[in-house]
Amino acid sequence: MTAQHLFCSIYHSARHEGMYLYVNKERGLDAVPEALRERFGTPRHVVDMLMKPGRPLARVDAEKVREALLSQGWFLQMPPPPDDDLYLAPGRRPPADA
Image 1: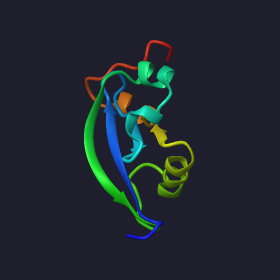
Image 2: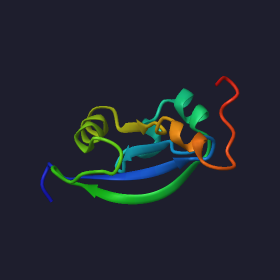
Image 3: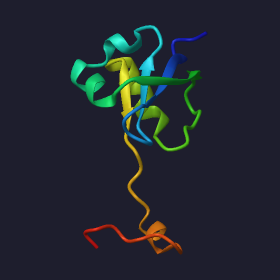
């Protein structure tokens, strides 16, 4: 394995749908600041993966994740913004502020 490869663990937030926490597997959750861990809630392990240069991720820039894992040991993936078209679907009500 070269220095360009990085093992990471990915966790899903128990409190926030669509929020994921990537951590450097070597450092684990200990690298994550306490305030973020409290806000994130109980982490639910999703998968361990090998991050390689050029390997894309579904909803986030893989290179930004790699850089954050190497520099601080963690990366927080926020949920996507709500889809306004979802509220146009039959049976759905618009948000209260609309």
